Length: 197
Image (tube, rainbow, N blue to C red; front, side, top):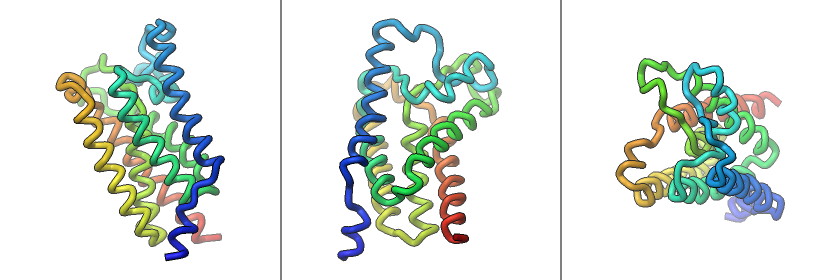
């Protein structure tokens, strides 16, 4: 039991970084509503002019409820990531952010409307859920698996209880899937490296 407690200790730096990332999304949301981002800063697969969305799509949101649901889940998952995997946490966030966006940009465009602009942090949320889940399995940290499943279910309920029917229909399952795949790949990569050291 003492081992579990030491593994999930949160440092002030963890909270500050998590708040900073989430706070950045709120800043961009305010700027969006002030009219600073009028064109698509999200991702449209194979549209060269939306390559910038690989970086910016995560901080763009379509509504306040969309932002709130993502903010709660993202903050909790970031805290867990820093607590369990502090040495690689920032690498996971940055690589997962870029990888999930890149996979979404490469998503077969014939499987969706060509003009659909994907925005929101849900891809990164699913990346973190997936990473915590699979990294927990690969490294036998089963409390990480249980917590990530719990947060995943919490996030799922938040999305559908804070969204209107029209927003729920527009949820980017492609972004969720790309995020989940990214989390799995990163978990496999980092845990394999740690075992070989």
